[in-house]
Length: 212
Image 1 (spheres, rainbow, N blue to C red):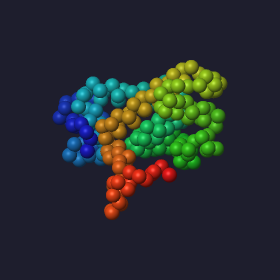
Image 2: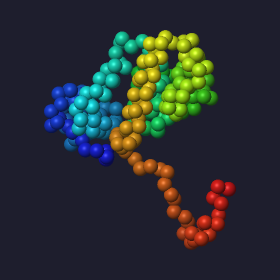
Image 3: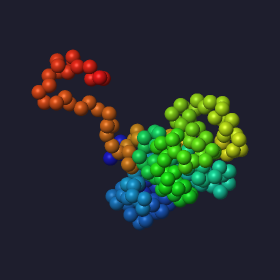
């Protein structure tokens, strides 16, 4: 279950209710969850507890899908899916596997997202954008000048700004999804202590160098 409460149609947010109609039909998202893509749909209902937040973030979706965007959809999706993967959000990664297919990315490329540095299925601009995404997400914006120079060989300033904004937005979505345990990210942290085997005393374990 999400860590925060949820708000459905009863919240009286016209914008959210229109989205609920699209995602859930005539069902109540709180009592009859489930979207066509297989998610529970609680990302929407949790955001709806603050209607202004729901409206603001949904406007962000419209921004990146607007035909006025200069960055090509297939390039944009590289940032979104890689951000989801590197943050460790199964929800964002899974949803954007589907979105990548929709914009024409090959199955080979989608499968190679986790190991893109050793993959041979990406061209020069795609590799530069994947490297840039890792700098944005993993290095928190620490981007080598040589990498930025490579981006500018292929993309306009407007395209780079759009890509940067959209990718950082999806890093935020991935982080929030994990923190609030939304959708597929509703899972316990796997990094926990595993109890020692039966019959092994703590005194013995304390003398063992477990790193070797």
